[in-house]
Length: 438
Ligand code: NDP
Image (tube, rainbow, N blue to C red; front, side, top):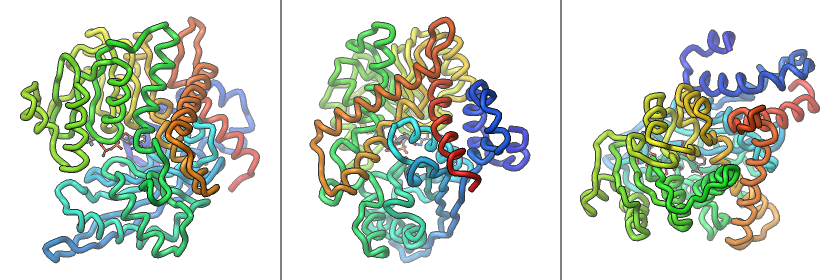
């Protein structure tokens, strides 16, 4: 860690993600002196390669705009590089390196053959017209297309990149590469997308939560769940929870948070879905429509709830939030976002012995169904929604099992952080050892 801190002092998110993993794999690492001999851990922490490029595009006023574009190919020991693309003003190398690092362990946990990658730009689709988004996506891919491919590196969506952006990027990729092999997942159903891919991260997180609750014999029905975000992950998490009889009491965006103490109805959730996906509106408009509480700049963690499912962004839940949640009786936290809890918050959850699932385990359903989309594309077949959903449930149960095997402590408590990191690490490490020093 000291060495990485010296070499990458301006990359706090990357260092945070690495430290969490290294701390929890210490025991198993020390059982394998050969890892040390081959300096495996350093090779696993530093990305295989990083592409950084300028993306120039023309806005609706005819003005030329310049953004930065990146792709981090972190590790391909167990399969092609795989990971989403994020378009958000906050994107920088540190954030993408943390996401690519996390993705490597997450993909390893899925049981599918996928390495880890991440990409993105500091371009924000917010407030841009469709044509501006299209021109940006085309300019981004004009630069990146040579580095990706169905067996090389397969991107997908993330914050700010949904079906619209994936469609524009995939269209441009096909034009440049002159092939139709399904590079990109999260595609439209008409051109190689998989059923249940849009739902997969949110549904998968709920399936993981059900597995956790089952270890303590707790029923989800009637439980009050605080969700942050109102994007892809948050809305499908809420949809599955409503289906199972839980109450979704909060949702948010980067401007503020709504609070609905009796829980959202299906009609209200549908309103949020349309508001966000078709009108690209703000969550405050929901409060205006339904007259509920809205706190500008507020977050969900101050409201009494049984379960918290942070599903917006990194470091959105800090130590104080964790203490408030615990004081209010929260029994489980299952992360839809990547690294939403700060290290201090994680310490609080584990010290309190509540059920706590880190994103790399709980939100792995998205990339799992992306892996299934790649499998369908390769075979040129389509599975039914039910088939994909069954496979997703199976994968989430398997990830839970791996966490249990590697994370169970002497007092019977399942430390999901330790379990997920150790299981993810061992598979990648073993594959790297077998393939030599590359
Ligand atoms: P979306 O862009 O669909 O939604 C993101 C949501 O989070 C929006 O409500 C957004 O609000 C809010 N948000 C974004 N940045 C911030 C911020 N800095 N502070 C507060 N709120 C913020 O993204 P996704 O739902 O796809 O992704 C959400 C999280 O889940 C991310 O951490 C992502 O990495 C992770 N994830 C996503 C997967 C997927 O399949 N999509 C898979 C695995 C993990 P606003 O509209 O105001 O920007």
